[in-house]
Amino acid sequence: VKNEWTASEKEWPEPEDLQLIASVREPRQPVTPRGRPWTQHTYQQVCYVPERHAFFMVGRGHTWEFSPEKMDWTCLAGPASKDKKASPQYQGSQSVHLLYDPRLKAPVAVTTTAPFGIFVYDYTRMEWTRRKDAPMRWDELYSTCISTSGLHLVSGMKTGLWLFDAPKEEWKPLEKYPEALKGCRALAHDPANDVVLAMTKPAGEKQLALWVMDVKTLTWTEQKPVNAGPSSADLWAPLWYDPDRQVFLYLSYDGRGAEYVGGETTTWAYRYRKEKK
Image 1 (cartoon, one colour):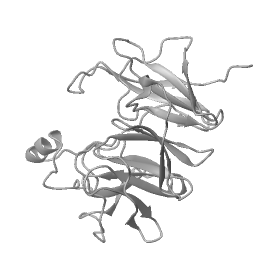
Image 2 (tube, one colour):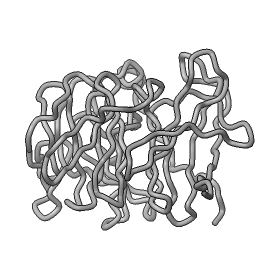
Image 3 (cartoon, rainbow, N blue to C red):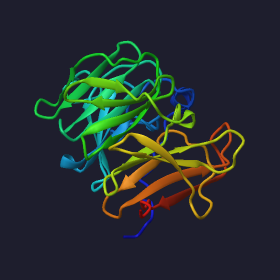
Image 4 (cartoon, rainbow, N blue to C red):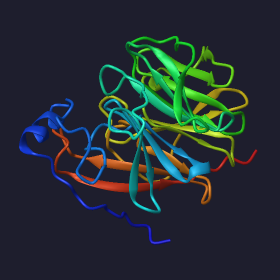
């Protein structure tokens, strides 16, 4: 294991398209000359599909698959795709959330703006199918899959914490959780300990706060790490879990400011251990 990042070859759009992309608008050319998507918001619009060893993304009217091994992109749906099949539409880059469901063995897109709905990607037919509406409207969602139960813990910026059963299309709001976890955007499940770790940025504090939820009891406990951790904001799905090494990984971009430029990007690791009784 090299523990290093690998960058793909860069492509630059025409100046007019670059301006449109910078203002989060649709460029004139939806794909690059090499058939890849242009840079865009991807924080909660990407999931990993283990059966295909590929990342799956919904963005700007298109559905994409990315192979890390081959370092290439395939457009599965949208105007630029081979068969021009429909891709889930939404208003605003934060109003669609993508997750992978292990029981359906499929990506699931939840759109909270018109046209509202839950969409499941069918790999046998290579197309999306629409299911029921989600209970929230005009919300920004983040989630983690609780692999020991198959349920998803979903955090809505406006609507709080939910348990989502994708095959049954059922949503259950969590009734009790700390006030600090409202609007949480960084959470991941640890199947070895069967807990969910959540990270939040307390007002006026330099360090991020860590909370752990016991999956069986749905109770939360604040953690006190022995050393100082990352101090960047808990923004846009920066926390993930590596099941092979049983460790949480956090991507910190401290000090970048309002324009998201400058500052330093660092990768942190955190291993949770249950207290011995």
